[in-house]
Image (cartoon, rainbow, N blue to C red; front, side, top):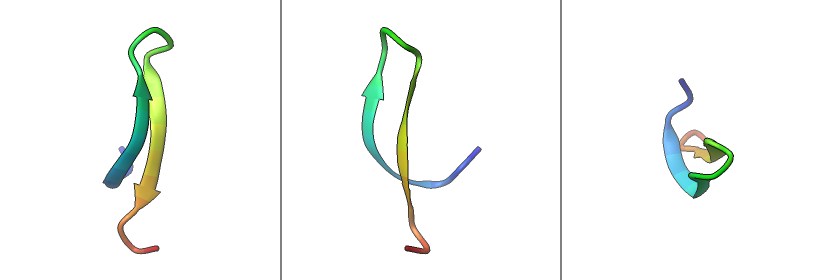
Length: 23
């Protein structure tokens, strides 16, 4: 699983986008 800040999460779709902490 990717680590970083979650930009947004769709509970309906069950996934979201991650902003990698390494840039």
